[in-house]
Image 1 (tube, rainbow, N blue to C red):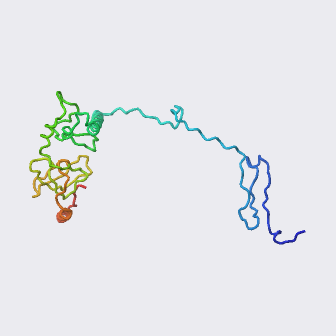
Image 2: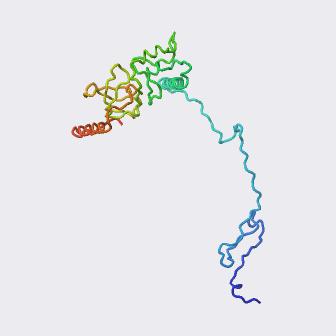
Image 3: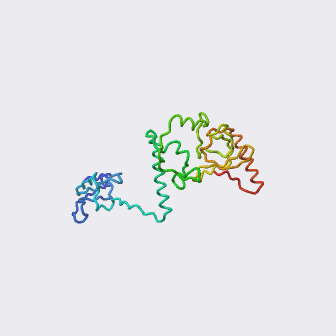
Length: 253
């Protein structure tokens, strides 16, 4: 008999075959008996189940009985006459925008002449007339013709040469801009920008502080005529005046 103490201290791994019904589909089980200095030695459980076939993905039309099939709801009928008119204006505005942006080569009615008569209202999600006394013209009038080069030259002869119209999101309070149209291009200072409003207008006044009025941002030329230091100093003065009057300074951000 071998009396080697190392052999006596070694505990062998016990793998015992057991019945199938006792452990479902497993033919062996793993014991916790270590072998030598190995703490987690042993056999892994081996499944006798055959692997399931992966589900085939259907690239065709889904079955109508499929619960995951997306159910498209029928278009909702407008509840009021005002809502119906708003939806119609939004649809017409979207069609006009596509025609102006992508179909200019087809000599569409929605050209530069038409776009200068409207502005985009973000709240209503549609075009609105620049002149409140006149409605938006959605259909070309009788006898309408595309604009010729001579007519366009006559219409744009008072545009600022080489200028770019100001975007509403780029307008800065305290900045000085010039008007995009006009023989003398008068300069004004923007006092409020109203970026959160749906109407893209700004509040301006003359450089002497008089004649305060609302104008649409694209009526101004995009070039800022005063320096950043000058604009910040103007904002500081307006804040100081507001504090003396006991009101919060507001520039329409």
